[in-house]
Image (cartoon, rainbow, N blue to C red; front, side, top):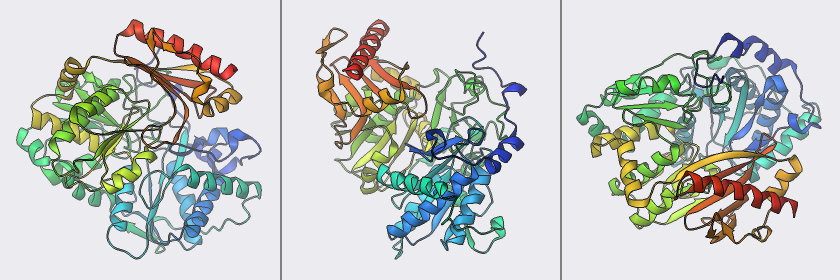
Length: 543
């Protein structure tokens, strides 16, 4: 019997001391691909137990970032933040040792505490908008929602969002070369934590909370008298919500303020692992148990760049459903935005968004997976909202200027309360109204086995590799290997009909490829789409 959705047992918990020892003692062999520095869509991730995220990695990556920013002429402050994973504090310390030794002007949290990803993004953008002669960038130490045994490390250049593949590719190559050379060329010095005069300090929380009033209508939330709950799931948002409640005078309760690097209070995810995935019903089981206590209840992952929205009448919303509701609401309640501001979505997000965009008369901007693709549009205001099916999104300030260029889970959680306050309806009710207008799509992601070679081939496919002309009984109207919005390669394939679609992408961490599929006909039709999708992809890989 599956234990998914049940509280973690002692046998599920990591040995934090052993993990920290492994971080220092195990040295990677970069001739082994599994031990190399490799940046996915959200930085380098891995576990110290697997020799995939260790002190050697972080020292080398940080030195590579120092050299990269110097080559790019970036001479301003580097803002650094971390989440609550056990490896995040040791990795932050390692990074500081290299940054300080190289004479980088580094800025850390004045409270010596954790910092959500969006707070770092906002700090970078605020500095660069202030007319300074130099430019800031940043590092966030987080593996996002990954299990407690993992660590993560990502670089955000001056645009404030995730670095693009040109930057991360160079940084990874240089870091691996430094590791192969036994860290020769890495500068390092002892750093005395927050008391070290060479590390500047800023109150990330105070600055972020104060600026939130420019992007969320707190007066409407306060006037509606909503009773709001927020569960940080033991992550970096843990002491942000209380500050927000105090600053804006809203009735907002942090339902679980506990921080524990083993995450012993979590319920197990679908695969019986501890994972702080706020879009998973199993991981959010303890939050869902309290849904009737609040008008809106929300959750975040460990670095607060993802959101989970819980309503008393619908439970945990599918991320695609909330994105559609958020878009419909924002583009009818933000008169300060440009009239030509587009709606950004990733290629694996629901086509309900396409239909909402068409009804609003707004341009749809469809891009590959990865929030980095939304950055240019958010910076110049040409994209009002950018969202991913994995429950990550951000949008513009009320005046149409940039808020963050990385995902902001806190923002989207607060938006759910604004929507409830202004419309008098829950986001669940509003999504039901969208389905009455546009149909009720059925969406699912499944995995199929694939070798490393097959995954590489999938990432290089062309539309000509698909010989099928129909999908689940309907004519195929598009075979995409490039994103319609910006022409960037998808790293996979998307096949579209008028009533359904599927997309296939190689996994960056497992020997599988992911099939995302959606049907506006029903579950049986979706199953047919999924079966034919696998046959189409397997044939293309064999061809």
